[in-house]
Image (tube, rainbow, N blue to C red; front, side, top):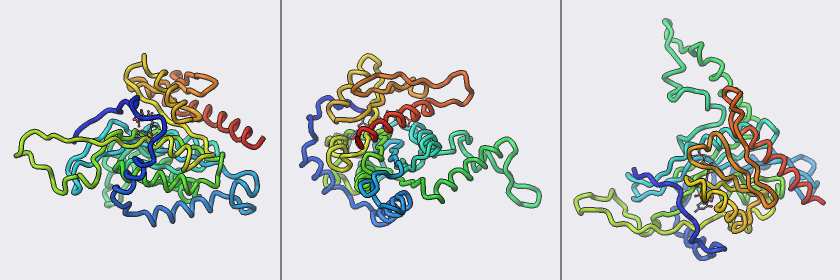
Length: 333
Ligand code: PMT
């Protein structure tokens, strides 16, 4: 497995060329569970639209929804994949934000990297199955007292949200799956109009191996050093913003390791992709603070360090909800 950090996008053109987008999708391997995903999206949309009117335009309002992307995409190097390029994202930001959005009444489509952090599970130990449970003398399975409350909360809150139809979890692994599912979600949520948010916290690969030029079998090391050319993943932010979900409230993230360039890059993303908000964060302090950048303001949002277990996502989601409400109000005016 290789490791690659989030990559610079400065040399990408203003608008993503249509041909690049088309050729990315045309050459991508078919999404295996497309029909299943579409079905669950249809059910999710049905359960989250009022009975009096199916869409935003019929009754002037709809439940609020947010699509949260979380974790990092992989770039396979072989069709029968043994090796892949990955990045560091744990999915904590997306999972924690999901909990806070649910708490304030949003319904959530959680598009997450398989194996990454899950909502309601952040306080569980690393290997919950082995660390939270023990086998009693009569062979029944018991939850250890130390973890009982956390396990109970994780199971009940997660199951309740899924059963109520307000939390739909869709997993991805590769960049191909991620972008295809994101497109399906954005089209499905179109009727929510301005009531939908795209909260793009996933770390998305900037380079990939096109499917048609990818080796079928495991690349052999006998032939010496590997010389490989990666194509650029078309930046989908402008396509999502302008074509897939033109009325939604769009939030992208900007991650840098160099504080000196962070805000300039966030400003650039705001203008270039016409985002409503860019959330700037630095690798080492991302759990402590983020800077919310909009056309009108730059707000530093910090974790409440006086409260044990407090997360920066709590005040962050509060601020996002406030700005989203103003967006909906302006839209209606
Ligand atoms: O998951 P955690 O460990 O909690 O970490 C959270 C986080 C640091 C990953 C998160 O807060 C974050 O910053 N996510 C975005 C990281 C990133 O990929 O930044 P970027 O500069 O490469 O991309 C900027 C935006 O463009 C992203 O919103 C991304 O969704 C989008 N993008 C990127 C590449 C691409 N080809 N198309 C895109 O649309």
